[in-house]
Image 1: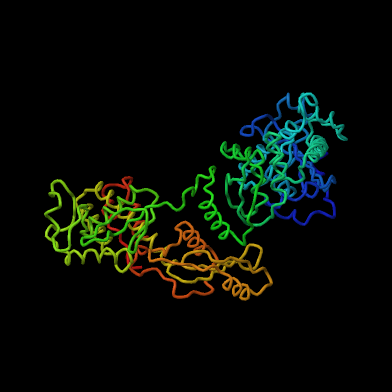
Image 2: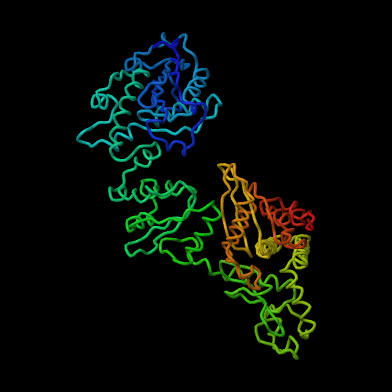
Length: 594
């Protein structure tokens, strides 16, 4: 076909979705309703980096019907090697009036928009097209790509198809147009090959493009047979539980689309060894459908606590954590324990990190670090090791009454009444940097940032846990509202007000049926920290609105949250900066009272 006959009109009933690029989710539609553009190229050689396109041929198909064709010669801007002329029959004389690729490529991209690109040996053809797009400074769209060579090797046996060259497959499938090493003829032949291969996989339960992509990797028949576990799962958010031979929970996870997520475990896209082992043991998959992602995340955490499934790494022991607490004695000190208490911060994933935070707080508040119990009538000092042996920062002649002032300061710091310890740390950093002790300043900077982050995390979680009831709403992706009732930091009820439904009656029903929370006097009022963290992240996500609250939702004005900007600026003062500029970096020129 001449390049003058570049594009044949598409069929009048073309799919309206062709005007945009399809998402992977949309490609879960049947293969018979998926639009493919089968493309073939002729080039001056085999390297996309150094050679150029001389001809493009493309056929747009859907449901076995041809929607349109495109064919054009392309001026490569160079002479064609003799062996290429002999192979394709395309000569330099044929390309004298041909357009350059910068004119042809936009037309091809428009022709292929919204489709799945198909090519025989797709890395070759798509590689040349991407290289052409790069040379012409044109962005390459996020096409889904299917290679008929790869599909043929997956579908056909070696006995049936010793070779998967296009000419061999054309003979096998008795195509209507024989490949000739001209772009449009080869594209037409590839169309018939594609149809023949799709007919084969349809008998194996592959009916959509996403299923076809899942099918391509070679997995065991036993693993593929378990796809039936996902057949009846809803296309909704929720939690899934893989059950073992004794009905035990092997693995628990969440998904925004239960059927799609679980189905992925039975395809070649699952490459994790532990998960393959788990799937081999599984006998069924249970599920809990949820209103939205927040409910799914919370239910997953609760099920992990209840079952401790062996194949879950994350949150395997979600109740375990370390807390920094004030001991109950005449001369309190900071102790790292498993159970939170009033005026404590945490949780920490490791005891060592909690201990380091506690030591820093003691250093800048004067709280004692010696461990011997001191009665109320005594003074701190005689029982404390000598200064040369101990770094205990508490004054050696403190009475219980004077020491109580220090303890009160620490309690108020944790509660966000003031940020005096952080101010002292900042002043010390500035002193160190003024005397050019930059390495010492860097270490204290990191310790200060760690203290601020730990205290802020507790204060942020505690601000939500302090509310007896908080009702939240977030716009749902499909319209309407995702709703959540939070009581003392716990998800008490969740629901969905669908598009066109007034949300307030749904809110009233959720509040009426919400679980009762029984808070304690710890900073998080007994709420599980990971569950509360999920709620806080959801509260901070785009579009969330507070429908109602039992009291004002606030973080402390002088809490560690006001130090975020300072910590960010101080972190920027690394050793990579010129020495002469470090002092300004350490002197964080920000107002911490934001």
